Amino acid sequence: MQTEIRAGSYSEIICDILGFPIFEDESAGSPSLRKLDQVTRGFLRTALATGEFKAELHRTFLCHAPRGIKAGRLLLIGAGKESEFTPAKLREVAGTLVRRGRTANCRSAALWVRGDIDPSITVRICIEGALYGNYESDIYKTRDREGSDVEKFTTIVGRGIAARDFRDAVSQGRLIGEATNFVRTLANEPSNVLTPSEFALRASEAGSSAGLEVEVLEREEMQKLGMNALLAVARGSDEPPKLVVLRIEKQGKSAKKNSPFYALVGKGVTFDSGGISIKPAERMEDMKADMAGGAAVLGAMLVLARLQPTVRVVGLIPAVENLPSGRAARPGDIVRSYQGKTVEIINTDAEGRLILADALAYARRLGATRLVDIATLTGSCVVALGHINAGMMGTDRETIERLRRNCSITGEKLWELPLDDEYRKAIRSEIADIKNVGSRWGGAITAAKFLQEFTEETPWVHLDIAGVDLDHEGRAFAAKGATGFGVRTLVQLFM
Image 1 (cartoon, rainbow, N blue to C red):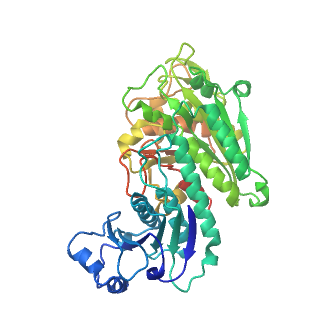
Image 2 (cartoon, helix red, strand yellow):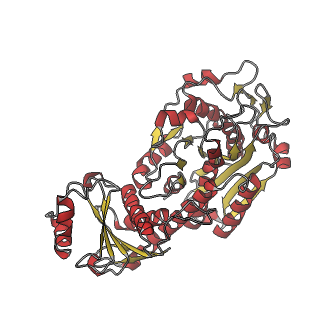
Image 3 (cartoon, rainbow, N blue to C red):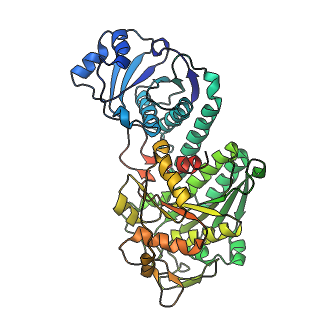
């Protein structure tokens, strides 16, 4: 998609479809809308008066060949309450415009920006939203594909603003939008295509192009290091495990002296059958996306490699396949982790925490002073928070608060769950240092308590994205399928 910034009047923009956001508390007589109603000779007043259009968020109303403007179509887009309008909602408005343009076979779309948001953030967010909305999940369809790509997207920023002032914002928007869509493609891939080896290969290719140093630890190296928790998960599969390490080349030049050293660690289970503790057949096909956390770390690192943050960042992705076989780990097995702690495996379907345990400990060995992990870790988190918020827990208050504040920009909602010491009792083992699962109660929290054992005193944040990695319903601003959740959250942490 080609993107551009234009300063001027919306009525003069030539495009196939023009998007105009409307707030719920506005009327055709409102000062900010009076011109649109006059230019279109009462179209807005009629649309609102008849009730055909309501300005609730994501609602739309399309007018063909509108009077008074040069666009081929005018799309009114509900923007919700103006007092609640955030950059995240602006991103959704841009995505809604592009999705509607796709269904109408529009080649070009333009958005008239409204709302009290910093112009540079506005430009970046609009481009992110447009790219997000232009994405389709039907990469393996040979026919009956939905809509057609919007090839050009214009953000109209009004008079008196120079488009050249937003070059960085345009670049950032494209980087984040394209990386998010790359991650969505990875998570949408079937597991017969995206094996751990293929995941590592794509990470290597994309990482090298972005300026990342990519190291892939193979099974033999992990055996020498003693990563037996990670290797236990991989034992049941013929596919070899990989540990992908992503470093930003020459980052020392941009990183401030004595700045924190962050490690981003993402779960990369390319298919999770549950192992011996096998999952029910219903919706098991979704387990191809159990690597969404690892993909988010990869996507974020691709962006950060180009943005060169002022703190050091490394990415780690343990990639495995969890299958049952005669070699698979069994309930009751005990393994010694890379850190040296022994783990009693109670349930082989609690595999994500095992691979993350070794990866988190290895990140500390690499020198990381702050840890952030992201994983489709527990069904319990979905029970607690549904498909709206990701769970957030940890010991790093500074990073947690920053992540929470950033939600209004990223649109990726995070809800903090408690991490009281009393939850540790549920994962005590009688014959090992710790067991990998407790009772069904508070499962998202006890999973985090398990991970905490391997972070020790290092400040750490855990993001459980099990309920937000896939969207089966479809949204006005996005295709069904993988959401790419986490890319924006991780990138914004360093902006």
